[in-house]
Image (tube, one colour):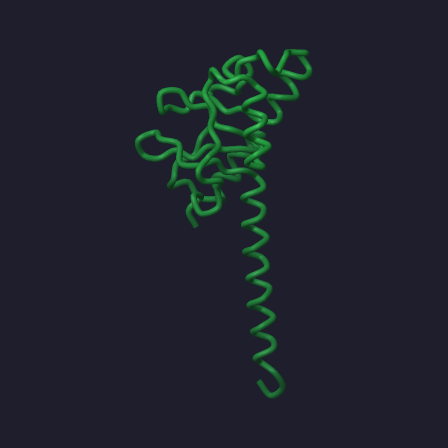
Length: 144
């Protein structure tokens, strides 16, 4: 299955010149834990809830004055649209990532995959398998 079927599309994005409060407001509005930082149509970073806590709150920076470019994570680990869900999960677990931008063949941002996306998809797959097994057992009644 394509990662694009389970990722957040379109990805929430901000400029590196945005202030932290703008990025956090967008994250809240979109109900996401990260925003891609885009400059001149290129992915230059990612700004996450973890960045807020470690680089803003812990360092006692003013979120109304701090620019995203000063507290974002960069460089960014990414996946391609051809990356499988299994490969993406392995990368995210190995690198301790909760969000993984997905880039197209020309480097354009296509979406952001989260561990929540992956887990929700896996639960749906397991539910479908369970329902199929239940149906199989019900159809194969006495004398089956």
